[in-house]
Image 1: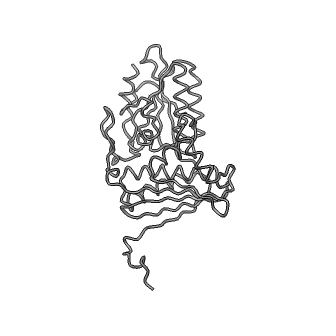
Image 2: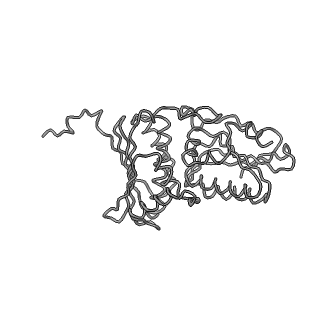
Image 3: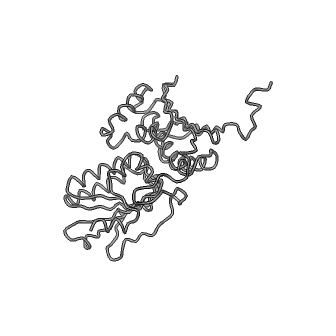
Length: 123
Length: 197
């Protein structure tokens, strides 16, 4: 059985003129047992808005992510940036931030302590 | 006959635990939980290092399952703890996997990725970055059975072993005592529908 993970999407574009803004909330853990299947869902979200997509990844309930998940994160980031969008992270738990630190991702991707701060940052 | 080892009190002898794990990756979360609890409660390493060893062991096992042992076979994970001194983790596969690699190939692959991190795609960060940076030694050895043995050791350094990591810019210091899985308020606002992907 795959490690439990739930990803929800909320469109908050109404608060942001001329932008498509979505919050993707992760609950659980991303690892080898589930990341390939879950990644397809994120690619669909990205492909559904070819331009100006602003994504907030709410990681406040994400307890773990492995190196392949980080690989997908970097790929999503590149795709969103290349189409004039933005991708930021919010609510990193200490162990998750530690992993992202060691691979250098926190130096590349904007990240905020809370979801509220991330939402303000996009305005 | 008394050996030197016999003269060491039992409480100070290295603790060795070996787990035989099926190649189905679905049990990996259980191994992570076990690793966290072992490191936190037995080794003398801090909470932060207990979390880090979760990643280290996860990445070692993923590598062996993907490359080293075919479906239906096992990998072997051995933990050797010398309390307040060091923790070693050894992972062995059977060499029957779809893409088995020799020790020499592994050394070269890791060195290549460490020198050229921009070449890392979806895969590659596990050994070249996470394990290399969080351990003091990473070794590969060809087994007589044609499998591969990957060993790491991390020495407990009191300075590194402090609970809280260096302060983040504008965000304060990380607190590893906070529960990893505690639900936090999800103030995403009302009105906009939420869809499960």
